[in-house]
Image 1 (cartoon, rainbow, N blue to C red):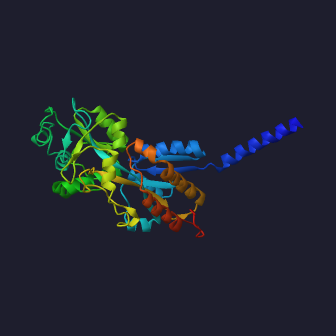
Image 2: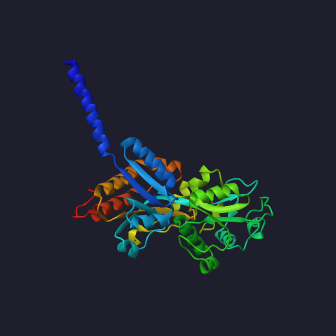
Image 3: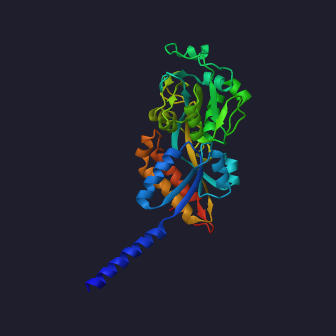
Length: 347
């Protein structure tokens, strides 16, 4: 009897293991490098708790949009929100998942993180190639207490289609008429000067290696790579440090219903505490699902992240979505994401 009972228990354990394995689903996503640090952290914790794997590739916002349009991934990610006509044409739902900040990063001997002060106009002139030396009067006037070298400035920008670049060039277009006229905004632009790195990872690596360089990355990359970031002068004329609180201040008055697909741009927002290059990062998912279980599991991951990921986000200085916005997002999931026969995927 004891032997039979042990066999039954063993069989039960084996059945449970097989059942759990069968329930585990691997979900694929690709796109923006801006949110990659938090998506990776969320995915690791989510896998530990549920057994489900989220395989996310940091390939840039342009690649993320292309892959979800081609339906080669279960979800795409972009920091450059898609416009209403593109969403409609490709039958996509878009929603914000996280908020963060893009920061100027520098590699200048003797300058510590947060010491150097820059304005948007000065940064625009650096990236236009008009300001070429670190001891230029325009930089010195903002930093009279610092000793700046006479070295040439090496500009580093993104080489791939990038939502971080969209936010950066959107900001520069708002603070510099010359930038707006000569370069403009977009995921990819014709850079007047500098060299390109792929992804936030590539820009961070170049700035870390190249003395007297300047680039722009999402804040978590600056911290992870021990890069010196700068202060920025915001719309209210205040010099601010990049912090979670400064990113939250910029996003505080966002009207997520003002733009189709909730595609709000958060650069150069008013407020004495606001960080001027704040951005939301967006998820793109098909409205009509040939693989409804994959879509359901992708949404389950973001549902888990919204409910359980706030502290993990804070540890990387991202700003979680507000509760009222999450409710709005999940209502859209219920109403707009359907199976091939019209049934709701998320209930």
